Length: 222
Image (tube, rainbow, N blue to C red; front, top):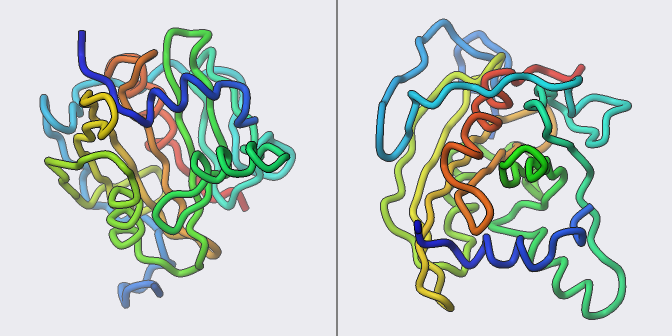
């Protein structure tokens, strides 16, 4: 069985608690160019894993469960809801640990457990105008787990230029390892970070299809 991360353990134990400037290129911040998307099969990117089948609707725009400046399609069987920090002293401490990381705050959680997947989350930087690479570096470094194998690359994500990261995290408590992936895009407001990882309840092929569908279908929510 693949080793698992401490973050995945926390997610499994708390299910239900979570309800700079543009470059001078002539394009708006974040808008995609015609540069082809990279293709890297196998470890660590697994670009050969295809996007999942779309489900009902999208998330991100006004009137959706998670109002965001971008929208993306949901994979079949995956359900989105806004992240809310639990109330009460203990709940606030636990909620802060799960909803704050590396200068970002969790805004949306997409639950794929009913279709055999794990969780996809959207985080927003606490400050506007953060460069995608800087947002990812801070996010990855914000874990309490031991990190290794961090890699970054520039990609196209739907209508946006983006930066993508992958890393291995080894839990400092249970000495288990898992791989995570994240993609960051700059919007007119906060920079958004979309994350997914292997865990106790999900393997790579369970979570990457929903992540691919979401990141490849990113659009301005208008």
